[in-house]
Structure formats: structure tokens, C-alpha cells
Length: 324
Image 1 (cartoon, rainbow, N blue to C red):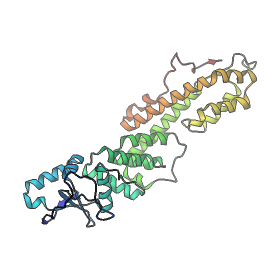
Image 2 (image 1 turned 60 degrees about the vertical axis):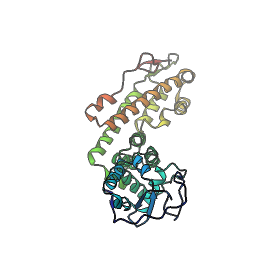
Image 3 (image 1 turned 135 degrees about the vertical axis):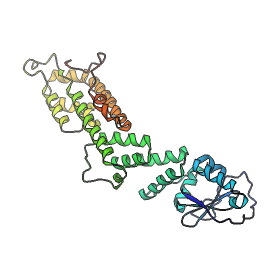
Image 4 (image 1 turned 180 degrees about the vertical axis):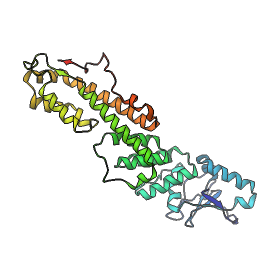
């Protein structure tokens, strides 16, 4: 349990602040206080927070349970402070999130973020504002494996999926840059993530290679059914993560067409090729979404079926044997 009831203290004399006032009165730089608060929280390093039990009840079932015990203990127990295991900085930030004020804190250090994540978990904080702020902090991490480990350990769904998406789209293997937060997850979970990435990349490469770009006006069509520019493009894709946006951009295709294509191929690619690339990007986006969902659900038994390249839709012009 994250807090205890200390020995009773005599109630402090009432202040003249109206009971309905909810604006915090800063009696010390590091603590948030309300003059009309009816409960005292004492941090692990000895600082007190006078706050409202009704606000804490709404924020956490853990607090609701403890206040029920206090009420059952009689008047003496009602005046005893709750001894918290969180330090002043953590409690101060949690309260600023929980209360409807405009003083929401920022998170600058990973160590403080970990303390907040543990406190929210331990105290069963249900506030959407609190969880939203911590979710945003995890999403903002530049290292996708750090974000993935934090989101996995503390159960932040949106941050988890965002981290998986970023990890799938990078060429980095991070073997020489393993964040310490990876210690929060077991090897099996990490291997599932790696397996999803491997399968997704193979499927994406198959989708890209499945398009046979053929120019019906090209004099080289009989001797070289696959245009030289497209062969060079596929060679480039084979050595790079296909989920990198630059690989399927119109600019990338235009560059290879300009360098390698016959004049008639250039004309046809510019009139229809960019539409085909738009359909290709759509299929890759659908694939990476399926990969993210498969990783999050943990249904590894069916992952191959989920990520296998889908049959091209007859309504999409980008399919086997494209003829311009």
C-alpha cells in the first residue's frame, strides 16, 4: 500500500478562505495547498499537502478505499495525515494534474517520469489528464525501444502502438544502443516485436516487387520487359526498410525515371506512375497498421496470415503486369 495513517494530530484552526475556493495557495514553493482542504497527505520526505478528499476520491479507487477506512476509525483517525511513499515532487505533480487548475507540470527527466508512472500505477490514478500527459511523454521519446518498453511495462496503449510503428519504420537495429528501460520487459515480448518487424518488412518488399511496370510504347519492351529504372529502384528497396516514407515517394520514383528511363517511359510514368505509387503507399500503410495490431494483441500464432501480402484489388491499377 502506498500510504499509512499516522498518529492523530489536532485539527488546525480554520482559515478565512471560503470553502468553495479551489485555487491553490502556495505556502511553500514545492507544495500545493488548499486552505479548506479536509485531508493531509504527507510525502516520504516529510512535506504536507492539504487537499480535498472529494477530489482524491474521484481520481483514485485506492484513495476511496483509504478514506472509507478513516471514516470507520472515527474522528481521531480523520485528523491523522496519510503517510505517502511518494516524494514531494511526485505528489506535487500528481496533484497539479488531478486538480482542475492551469498549473499542470512538465516532465523533463526520465527518472522523474518513472517515479510518476509508478505512482499512477500504485495509486490507481484514473484521471485522463494524468494518463494523457504520461502517454504524451512516452510518445515524445526519440528512441522507439525506450518508448515501447515504458508503454509495455505501464500499459499505455496508444504510446505502445506509436512506438511499434516507429520501430517498424526504422532501419536501426539498436544492438549498440539498448536503453536501460528494456529491462522492464521480458525477452519473449521483445522477440515478438522483432518477429513482427521481420515479417512485416518481408511482406512489404513482396508488395513492392509485385508490380511489374511495363511501358507499352517502349521500344525496349520485347527485350527488357522490366524497365531499367524499375530494376534499379527494386535494388534500392531490397537493401532498405520499405516502410521508410522516402522509398515510396513520388520524388524517389521521379529520380530513378529521370536517370534510367526511356523518354516514353518518362512520359507514361509521369502521367500514371504517381497514381500507382499512391496506391502502393496505401497498401503499405494498411500493412504496417496490421503489424502494429498483431504485435499489440500478442496473437503470434496468426501473425503470418495477418501480414501476408494481400491479393491486389481489381479496382486498384497497381497490380501484376501494369501496362502504361
